[in-house]
Image (cartoon, rainbow, N blue to C red; front, side, top):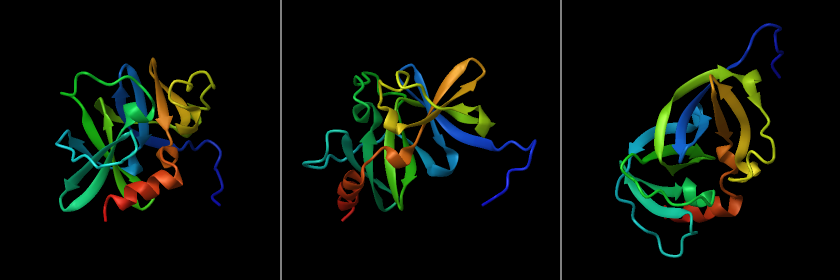
Length: 160
């Protein structure tokens, strides 16, 4: 275990994105690429938040819609939507987001635990914390908790 040295702050880099007016972020080391919206092949009997799969340079990648996962209203305007390809366990998963904002940097000690009522609209189990950047609040998601073990197993079956 590393010993924390006094006066040294750990810098965090995240990729920011929007769902509606709210800005979210995931750790940059979990993001493999940002992909333009493309045709998504539907998969029969998939969970309701799974849009389907795409062929990403020969690899079949399951795509989930974060709006559906968080039970948010559908986005009528898909022209700026993007797919964040993230590493979830040992697999890649695409997450549809309304738009990608930027790579942001802040310090680990600037991340606060989310108040329960703050995260109630998307489920506090998905929220790792909240960072204040300038005048914005950024909701930091724990992508490892976005899908249960069973849901991850279902997504793996799409690649077979």
